[in-house]
Image 1 (spheres, one colour):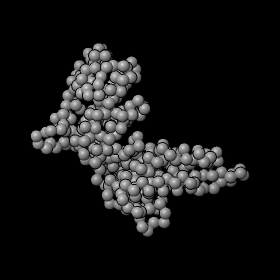
Image 2 (cartoon, rainbow, N blue to C red):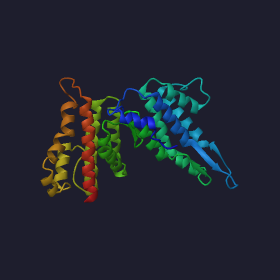
Image 3 (cartoon, rainbow, N blue to C red):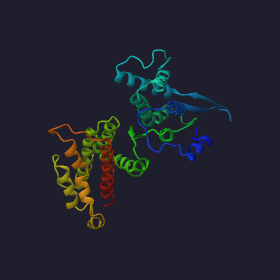
Image 4 (spheres, rainbow, N blue to C red):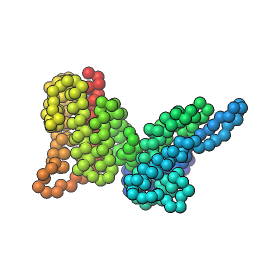
Length: 318
């Protein structure tokens, strides 16, 4: 079912009541119900009969298999026998847990795992069982993910499903123009290490582990440069610091001289940005405990994405 721009929603926007700052503390009941409805749409299948015009609707085996997988995964991680003692089956247990849990992170766990299974396995499961020849789905996995992310934005909840994870979104514009393109670039298998480290930095950020998020940003940034060095045959070692890796990039003119004239502060930004923040705020052996503010961690995530995107694009177009 498509997302409809209802009269009531338009009126709310006109009255200035649409939240322009995301909240992260709660998953509203309305959003939880909307997620359940998206899941139902994913598994709703129209099966065409032998006679023209004859068809009926059912939920195929993928429905049962995915919900059982989600339920078993969550029970295993939480160390419980079931998510809901009164539920009649895995699907009901998962849905009830998502609708009723008071813990925001656990609600997000359900959403993340469910959409991860949908993205990675549902279509292949259907193809393997030869359902596609005679069936059509109400919504595709990609359509379901897009709809989920629209519902997050519509409800003013600052999360989004990207690359197999729920990540925190602070600025929709920055996310769309910087973070998403960087994640798309990092989805290239050659950047597998950098991709995992950058997503891990987002996970730490979502959990409020801001020091760990900074370290994840630095690792992703360094891994991106090392990947390019390896691809190009440029000499480096695994022990090279971010500063020395940046020097290799400029020595080999990945960032062309004409770009230096237009972006005179580029090198300073790279050297004094993520690496410097990490060294000063979260390095080992500090004399006293340093608190990393969330806005510093958010800046590091965005700066890392823009730097990675710049370097990867420069390598791609070289």
